[in-house]
Structure formats: structure tokens, C-alpha cells
Length: 133
Image (tube, rainbow, N blue to C red):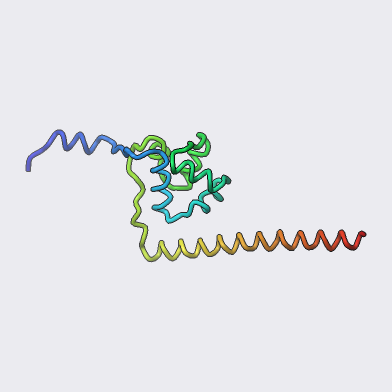
């Protein structure tokens, strides 16, 4: 077996992803099977903001970049500069998929519950206003 200095150096050198910031955001989100709406909700931004970032029409502020990295489970340096390993998109293991499906169902129920609470509060306010009139 022959030792290659170039191969050894290549192994030590961090890999660089030549994609754009927007492309890396999209790939990391896609690897988690996370919708743009879900990501926007977690970050507290509009879906249009996520779309603009992913299309490289705008860039997130530093604090949002670090929040993004945490939510997407990638190192901030990979997200910002493409240095290091890209997220693995082979999360199709049955247990992982079941958990993701359950999480999506709970999130949906949470959103629906929030809407129901808002509707009940509004109805209660109207009833109280009618009583006071």
C-alpha cells in the first residue's frame, strides 16, 4: 500500500461547500424535511423572508444566522461559509420518520388550538360587549 501525501492533506483539510448561503439554508432545511413555514414559525419571521434568504435576495442578520444553524442542526461556519460537512439527508430511518410525523401532527394540533382559543376569546369579548350595552 502506497502512502499519498496529497491524500493525507486532503483528508485533513476541511471540505468546502461552494453553494451559496441561500442554497445551504435550503439544503439544510430540506435534509430535515422541514417546510419553509415551519422554519419561519420557529424563527419568528415571515415565510417570504425564508424564501428571500433561500433565493439569495437577502441575508439573515447575524443573530438569525446562529438561530438558523441551531434549528437546522448545522455548524454556523458551514451555514455561513460552507466550511465543513453538509447535513446528511438520509434521515429516512423508520423511527426518525415516525417521530417527525408525530412532531408535525403535534405542531398542527398546536396551531389549530391557538386558532380556536383566539376565536373563543373574540366570541367572549363580543358577548361581554353585548351584555354591557
